[in-house]
Length: 224
Image (cartoon, rainbow, N blue to C red; front, side, top):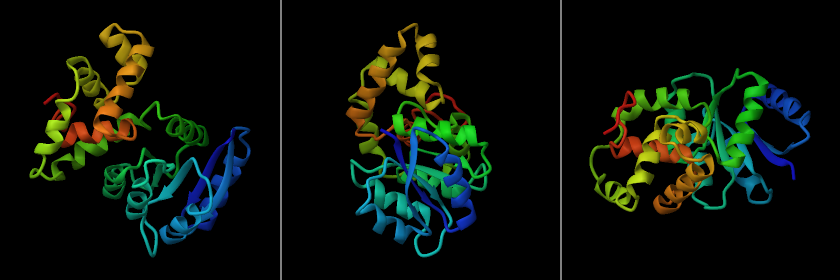
């Protein structure tokens, strides 16, 4: 089945360009569009979507709040944020709100398509190096109070799962983690799945954010 994509951006020309790129792919279909967050939420009530390409700066309801409202539902589509700036506070807020990753609007088509497939599969963080730079910049803004419950969540993990979580938070792929820990890639994937289940997280991006929130990984990439 084709990946069902929704385009949410207040610039019609941008949506047209993305739609043309996606329409040429045999495994993707643009099933809906919206010009702002309010319209997007209305459309999602009646349209089945797998991945939402979400602009962050829009009238009526911005992409951050729209993402937060979408991700409340455990069966919600994955959200891929589109931003103009590499280090964008809006993109950081959207990751915190539940987005599965973000890409720059001027990304080459091949990278955008790979990102959509990646987000849909849930197997990889989109642009891990860019996500890391974003978190390194904005992690100091994370609240320092009320974090104890989140720290306690980490106690559910085995030592190996905690080790895998640190490497995920450092932007490593399953293959890279497998090589580092001398494990099979399938075993690493199993560990990642258990981490997501135990910590009630949607995907690897949320693993990264939680690792920063709890101090498991410090800004700059060091282990806490």
